[in-house]
Image 1: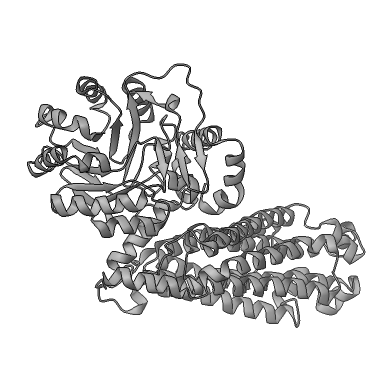
Image 2: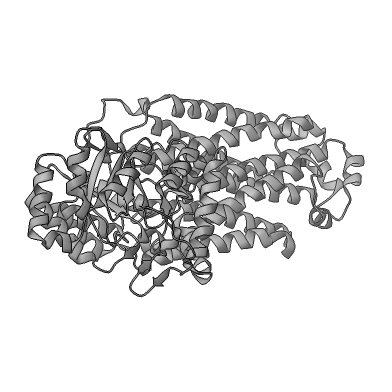
Length: 633
């Protein structure tokens, strides 16, 4: 679940049923989802996109796609390993692995919300054999997997390593065992990572510290993970751990792998570790207190810190050779088409080819039913408003998204536009071919094809990401939820209207407004119903396309500082809703039941927009100053 559902809908109920039951429910559900065909793609769709390739780090033979790892304390029973692999992390730590599973220990995990700390129950730990069996059933995870061993003897740890050796890429072991194991395992498998779990006590022991530094220098030990007991997770001890990372880096030099793993609950926490000298950071309790989107937010912050001032050279291409230009023209064409459709709908309503189809002119239509033309007018103005909204979003996503290298904007436009073009065929079954619609579709289809064929620009600008889980961020989660629900509601409404247009054509409120039955219209002219149906089917298709671009934009890109996107969504939505509501009142079709979806959608748009305004649009001077300090450092 993304942050905008976790923070708003699920966090409190999961906490109310207890951490153990809540985490088992959430992790078990995610594990089952990841196991079904297409499940891992669905997790990505909900916003956990894969990290930028520039964040990858290589240590020996092991490649970490991102500098963020998932700590073992959250999912001690390995219920959701495959699902977590889609969260944008660079590796997964499993465990802690025990020599034998506790029997009869039913103690519950303890959660301190004020201190943001969790103490897990030891009854939920797996043995090496149980973990190996689960990893075997999970199949390939596509990420490096590290196993944290909780053992009191070197002999037991060696047995665990032998059991898990073919399933993982490395091991994290207590510092007190690392000396003997590092010597005994040296050279067995050079691509295996051997990492020491070090806390303040181990580092302050001078003899242990000297031995640890010696193993790091001789590369018998791959690195150090700074932390504490893996079953205690949270913010307690964060500052001390950051300082310990700095001390170890200063003493060990640049080569060893150094991991910070205490209290990473926000992007700012992760950057503190990186600034202190860590190569990787681990998140665990941060997913419970901040939300599952934390790894993605950290990736964005690291990307900004490392590459915000780095300009990539783009190949020399003229504007017409770039995909964003044709996507922009497609949006502009939709917008101009919407203006033309609006102008026609507000004046003569029916075109000459409409009159040719039914064999009647406007005056004759009025004589059949004086409300027929106003009814068609309300359909066509509503369609025109939707076209204006789609055109506005396409132009904004092309100019401010694709042109800057945002792949999500490209995907959103292509999916939405492709669906919109397929809607062209929904009304052909009625025997009515709309020349104007066909001409506009033929022209815009060429723009879509050029958008997909031509190369996308490289990412030229990285927006300043958020660093803290402050009030503006939390309120924005409610706004993003409202805007995502709004996009989904548009899709549902479009599907319903398309089905009505292709079947019954009229709803009871329509016939009540017309003050006649469908049979009367068919008797007056058999082509009147197909004429109305084609407007309905077209509007439904455009509504689906509008909902898709709105939904995908909401799922992937409502971030701090995206003021252009906030304005685009709000302008587009207001164009559509104002046109829809105004024309209904203009023609007198003001049935409350009929307009409830429009009123509800309009309210949802503004609710989401107002809740997200501060986070997305309003400048944050404190954040700007903090980023200026971090980037300069």
